[in-house]
Image 1: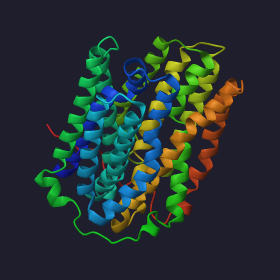
Image 2: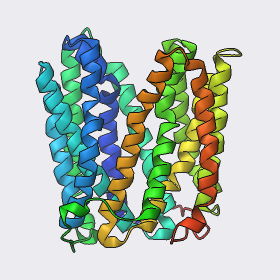
Image 3: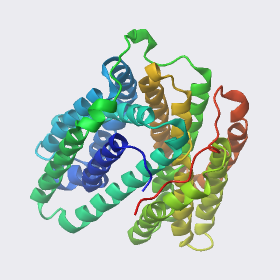
Image 4: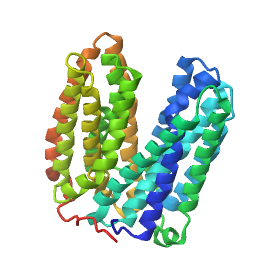
Length: 401
């Protein structure tokens, strides 16, 4: 395994643990609210959107808190809040109580996430950041996939108590993750010097950063989140076929992340991002062809999107942390996460507008065009960023026997 340092491994392990719990509950949230708690499907869907909306405010707050009080402390506080809200979500019944718990859950996570990115960026030297963030993405997919499998085996609407048990277990994983961040190897290596930042300076004033944030929002808009809506809305694919597509996406990430990391260790990061754009444009053309040629193209497209996700994991977050001064690392990561949240919120807006207007067949072509349009700004990054955007000095991940 790559030699990243004991503290970094504990941090990556904590995120794997919390992802395992999230995989058990996140995909079933709307099903739980509607089928178990009896909340109509419309309000249930709106309630599920409360978390991302809260993240728009929680991400910047988490960045400021990480820079002021230390990233490790903020991670622990955010995960404990998330644990309490998640466990409570399995017991509350009224819509206002549900929305309150989802808001607290989203708030806790959105505070913890920029602190996690900040701490990982601090623990890992620039030449190993692609490796660290790629392994993190691999761990998140492993955890979410394993959690989803556990949910499929143990949770069902005929047994409402199984949902309560799943949410309790999810809360426990967040507590375990918080406990993992308190180990001595992290306490000793985490930054302790803090900075007093006025609230009016919650977001950094860095043009290069905001360029990267804009790219992050666009990548989020044309990525796998869009696929979850478009694939069904355009082709009317069966749930079995969609399930196979989601499985193909997860398995591709798990199987391809480390080989792609080795393959691209000498690639400049801006060219890696351009490759993501090309892959995703090809994937959306496959989705477009699925309606007229072969529905199985959806499964292939999901795998191609996963290859792009693997490339993105080795490049985008490392660029953000290369840009970030140590005393502003929390705010830089928070700004990037907020941009990605905006991209996520734009996903149903774009898809819903086109599908609702009977223009759904044009959605894959629009997304393919957007993906192609991202290529040029990616290739121009070296002239726009004041720091090297290259991974040419990144060593091959070391292995131990």
